[in-house]
Image 1 (cartoon, rainbow, N blue to C red):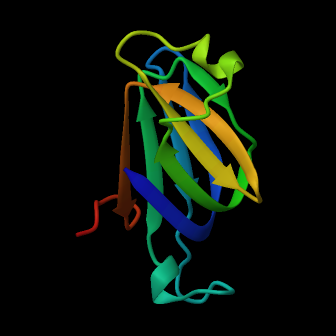
Image 2: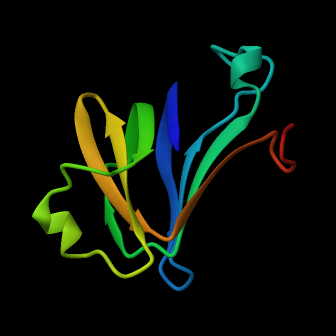
Length: 114
């Protein structure tokens, strides 16, 4: 699982009670500055069963992957059975999320695209 985008993402929501994390790149509406068809929908990156978050608030361009090697010990020490380590890259920096799963999708506000 690898995902890369040049769009800007934000740490949109974290709900501790549900262990749910949402990173979002907001859609633009026709008439907005910089509007293009490529920006006419949200991109949501959703993590479930989150047990560890190490992230900034803004991601100007993003890459997401399941970590398989070179995970720092400070991250591994938070790993619980059944969860995975995900890397989030932006601006030559690498951040980490530990969670049970990830879903990446596009919405046009209320409905999933595609």
